Image 1 (tube, rainbow, N blue to C red):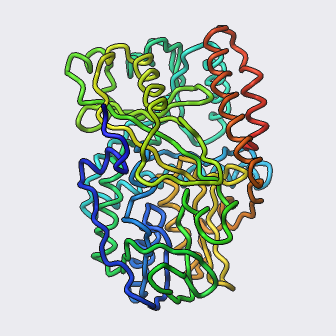
Image 2 (cartoon, rainbow, N blue to C red):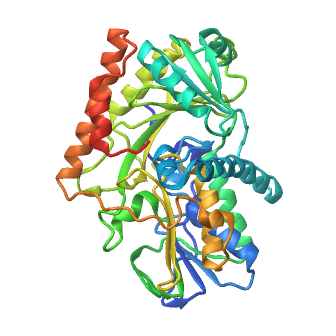
Length: 458
């Protein structure tokens, strides 16, 4: 049986952090950041670099990287969360195209900072490979490619042979390669960032749970920190804060990782470019080839717990492990019988319109960033730089991007949101099965209904 939970596989390779420097009573600061994941750490890093004189305190309930930052699939991707079309309708093509370019550039910014600061996160910029495995998926892929031509994506459409020459996915009928993506080791990145902000003089208080955020105060279980500027970077755990229960839905995602594969297996699979890999299913999976020769694969599993409950140590249901392993073997028959070494889960933040946000109110001093819906590794870096500029009162190009200071309505009360999420993913899974069985090129009706239920933008 695989190790189940214990936060994630990634921390087995860095060592599970021991929480340190917990808050010891009431304190003050110039800036308080709630949450020590990528968003909080990048924000602290850029603020401290710009203003070394600032007293910055990060308050973290467990340890740096305990949430999605230490559990994700390791995709440093250029995704505009929630898509570009809704933004285009409101802001125009040129503004959104520049947003896309800045996200492309943010990948290189992360790589440059890690190199400069000595953070080795196993980063390889091999791009992203999307693979279609039936006619309906291929039709969606071709439509996606046609739309991508309007944007600075530099996407390349691949036929079946070109796709399998990169990664030999069974049943592949086509693919698309986007160069703006890199594979990373999530825990190595977050541990390295935490080390660096400490070196810069940021006070990182772990094992310190924030209960409530209000203007001028962050109330914790160990004391209250008073500061004129308080920034929330809690992503999937936002629902645990007082008054924010319906702000962002905590969506669950699960992963498994194999034992290191043999050289013979890799000869059959290929994957020498270290691309990140995704299929075109509605309930899609995402994969990477790790630095030590494993395959890590993730998907939704049990997508949502009633009442916006969040997990603790990442324990994953056996049925989800079996589901992901079945998909893995279906994609790569060569790995049949390979041991699964670890399984884990985590939560990601989903706003009601499925679009991430960076916001700051200079009157109250309250700010926040997140709602990445699982595509936030790169966006956290841009969010950190944006919060830096907003907090310092600087008007820059990135403070005018479409995701800044957006207003989003709250999620419905229970049981409506639980019913909606369960129904949505049930329809996606049934739609995937129907498309696989029918061989038709048209997207299944159930998937279109699920899109309407979800409220996803385009």
